[in-house]
Image 1: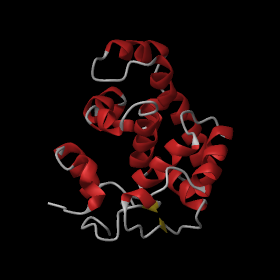
Image 2 (image 1 turned 135 degrees about the vertical axis):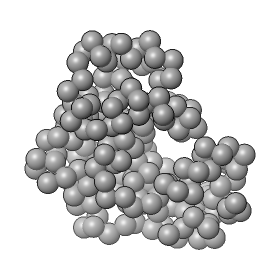
Image 3 (image 1 turned 90 degrees about the vertical axis):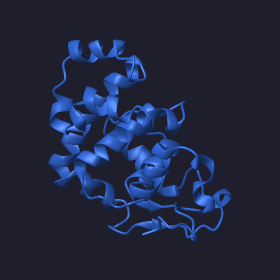
Image 4 (image 1 turned 120 degrees about the vertical axis):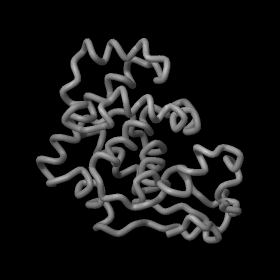
Length: 186
């Protein structure tokens, strides 16, 4: 088990620990995964990540495993039906944002070739690593998250304020905020 201060706040939660050790801040050049993280981070607005990560399987089932084209094709009726799914955060705006964001990501893919290429374009393909020593050093927002947030909003993506965008950057590995002594650092 990872004994870094990086994991102190969720050490007793096996779901969060697994996410931390196997996914968080890991580069995965995979449009589907990146879209999933975009949607899950959006769902977490005003809530804790713990709440969302524990509902992840329900979100995957409800949203066709976050296949971008399938999400973009969801009907109003299908989305309305999800309002009664107790496995989800039953917020109409957040549920409908998945389809809206999928359509925006489709347009991004047409322009950039992939969602991944669009995302990494903001850093010229280089991951950002703060080499933090304590959790208190890790920021909640950065110049990169502000810039990406503005651009995503212009492209019609919802729930991408600078703080959520920073969390998204961590989730997809563009930002590596594992502490220097963390065993999960890649």
